[in-house]
Image 1 (cartoon, rainbow, N blue to C red):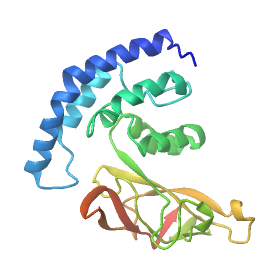
Image 2: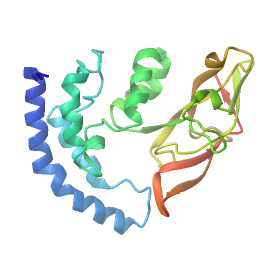
Image 3: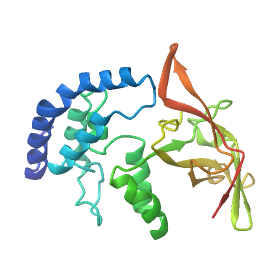
Length: 237
């Protein structure tokens, strides 16, 4: 299959390769040292903010958005894929340095496409600026959550508020101080047809009742990206 990069994608690739060689790869050791010195598994190392500033200066920012918006011209999947492959060579830094790190990428796409103007102002803009982080809360401890029809967390409307009750885990990044909002999947209508029972709501992480229980272990290691949450809470619309 012939694959020909567009002129724009080729220019971005050249700039990204230079950024990786000149800044990202040398910073990997700095990142590890800053994390080690902090003694805090959810510490946000200063080197990340330095790289973000340089990436923005070079125009390597929010490249993941696939469609033109007021914030970016947008790249097609074919244009973005080679860039994502390059950032994947960095074990700790490159995706976040370009503000192209999951789960924020998917969350920002959802907010850009379906968020209200108020939601975009409150959450999307700070995410696009790299000022805050977000998480996606779908997986639950007791069910096979890769099939969303198994979700047990309940979201019930009560006047101008939603009452949410449930437990979530493997919520990437939820334990970090910079994580300010979760897109949470829950069951809103148990009587609907099987694949129409679920909805997603925005839950600020400082909402009363949201409890970060612990970071989860993977093969015995503390996986700070993955967090166990409980959500017995009321969230105003």
